[in-house]
Length: 72
Image (tube, rainbow, N blue to C red):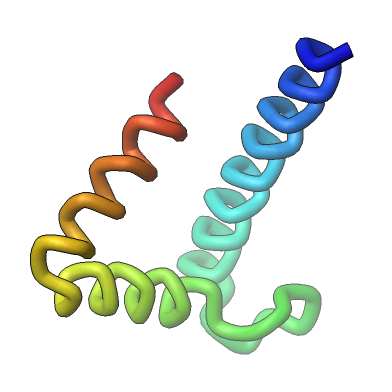
């Protein structure tokens, strides 16, 4: 049962990463005023990366953990 839940979580994570990548590509092609995207995706990603960079060592550790999670 636990492996089924873990499998679902992995699939949902993969789908989420794919949707974010698609949103970035659509926003690059059509601009930030795309009516079917909820806000400015590229600006949100830039803000999150800036926040991780401004957090110093904690941000570096968080970025490493996120990389480890998403690279599996």
